[in-house]
Image (cartoon, rainbow, N blue to C red):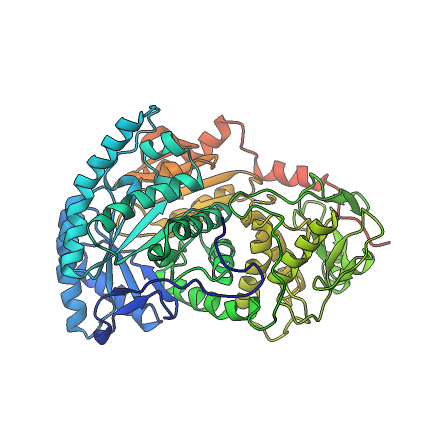
Length: 603
């Protein structure tokens, strides 16, 4: 089972075309040979027509081609008529997408007024209660019939009105039925979407796209790969377009790096017909990141050289780290084996950052590249290795982009029966000193994150970011975002929308100010309940909007505190963390870190 034609040559997956709106009036076409479509979502209340119009105009002005608006109730859905009419009167023809959760009647109303409807199979016809139940085949089939009764009317309306649809599965909102049959797995996400797609096809409706979103980039990558492989197995006419996104990515560099790992690596593999970068920021800030990611694709994949297709020594549908010998990287620092992925820096970076390293710093170089005696090879050619503990990397100044180069290296080592540890590089030539830091961040994240998601890499070297301190921090943040190691508090924070019950940006900043010293603790900040419990399944604690002005607090996916006044909720979250033994006072954290050894000094 494969998700693409090649691991080393860029070839975009050819899909059927899905038209959103009227192409003659600035509608968009996703799939086929059309460029990848960039989209975003409004953060304001859907009943505030003026605010929705203003935000849509702002998004269109910065290059957003598709705008999504939540419609949580039939009343909100009905107001889409006013929003769309006002936009068209202002000359804005950007297609509008209604975002639907839980309410089929809202979807039926919204389909009258917008060009596209997004439904989430996990909660469109099901209610999530985390119930454990064994289904017989007959019972499961009866459930599918019940779902068709609820979903088919929307399919017919979209077909008859010429509306497009997104069948958007979320890792955080799989139904109890899917969870009990398939578990909390990528397969469960794929099967959830395929159930709805089969209903659409039975009614001769094909104007839909798929999405498989998760806040964990590795899970997201596995899901999309598995989806595409399953679609290929089902037949050539299942070539529906793909919407890419990492949900609840957060803000700042964390949100951009998570998005780059998930979205960028799949774009580099030729997957994706429309993208949305979900940031806990104003929506207009998402669009430049989308455009920067799309511009990176052509430079990070091979489009010309005729390379021999490698046999992948990894399972692209299940994350397993490549087996490697454990070696000493520098004094007191080991890599490979069961060791964490290490951070290597050039001598020039060491010279600049070493004098500023304090004993309490978590971000520190762990080895100097020039001291390692790394064996640099051209993975297109045969080479010899004389020592099982020799660290291997790809030679600089090759005509290969780094992603196919390191995949070729891992494949060749597997063919040779070698388990030498691999040092990843984000670029194979001299970094451009004029490259904007925002581009350097995305490029390094796509390259290293993609390879880490393949299970390749025992140490990493970031060079595309010219700033010494910035490159060191970027390396650590990529590793944390890829789930390889933890050096700071991890946050899962959703982007705001009309369903959000508090100011996400302000609250996220307040929670970070109180908890950012809790290394290794994962906190989810969710504006509403739609994806909350599921996306928080691997978080330690959750802060979720339960009602206007009221917050529910979670341990994992279990709500433990209800209806807390928003003014008290951040401190109550701190109390909950303390009650569960995860709290450390900031001063104590600094004292503990001060006793840790500093990274090995150069010989």
